[in-house]
Image 1: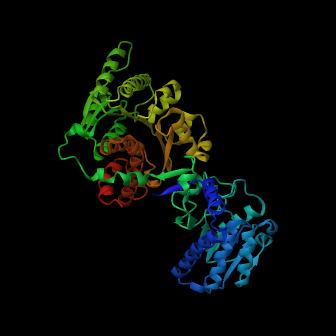
Image 2: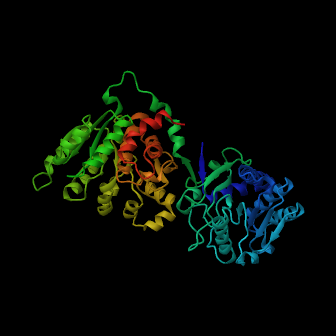
Length: 545
């Protein structure tokens, strides 16, 4: 299983391994440095330079710098004589491991320059630059010679084309949240990041995304299960791919005795007049991922469009909202929910009076029926996927939040999540995992917080806390209108196939991203259309790995 942990938990694991389990600190360091040495050597050989490669290692005076110096000593002993270190910071405050590795580096024939030399205007040239300035423990703003050293590493990369390998995480990035700790300067931009034991959340969130290059995780001897044993639940996430793989067989089998009702009935309340596209994309994606039946409830103007685009679906015209329509609309909602197993609410709905009335009535009726189902124990709940305009209506009419439950999932992008929580977009980006987890915990519900890397918080009723998943699949090509509408349909389809709402939420996020990657391969990074996400599902499932 691909576990992703916060930098804080990584520090806790390191302390526990050394202090409680008795694993020597230098032994862990030796293993970590060896992996850095191997990656530097591999790069030198790939470029045809081998021992002639000019290697420059920027080192802090803590254990990250000690890792760099240890790797440098290994390179020198292997004949890489053009290996030099730049030490940044007060060596008198250096860790014991740093002092030991510095002497080892010098004994191997290494050259060291101090932080004062980083202020020179002339930049050193390098083929490979190793960033061992800060590791996963960085928690405060980077200033002074440290900020200057980070700026110089980026300048060396840009000016001389040096290949940058960061040790654990690019310097300047917070390993918990991916925050830029050296603003207004940028953190180190790495070509690859060598990290140990586990990938860190900071590798993928905020400034971590795009600055780490190729992330390579190496085992250095932590016991199996150590992360789960020390985690409080908020600092350990699962890759959505792992959830999909746990249920992958379901996507390649279909009950030989099944009928169309065996794979759930989906009611889509979406699409105001002139906004049929969002409803279409949700229905198409649900069908492509295995849903048995789809029924629309929407505007008359959209009926001919949807019946032409998706003739496999049924369509019922929603009564127009007026002074006399409330009873008729309620009757339609009750009839629809008596038929449906799962509901999609929101895509293309608008935020007018009719939409507001529909969202409120549907959520109230779903909550009533689910309370009865929970009390009965033998009745199945109605699942609801809530997106787009329904989210914005809920954000304005906040009493509707009280209708959420473990049978509902919200799929907001960062802007919608800001409106739902009252936080700013910047606050959310800096605390992305916690924001999603807090929301799920507060309302005992599920949420996929969407961004370039998305977080799925799935409510665990038994544990009374959300299980957290990070979705690493996807492509910038998906930054197109309609992509989110496809995700709503995929959640419904995955629910039908897996039989589990909890599994469907992270599995759908993973498949949605993989569909985006497949579509981008066909149509280019700028050229995909949202409907091609649904059309790419077949390719993804046929070529899954």
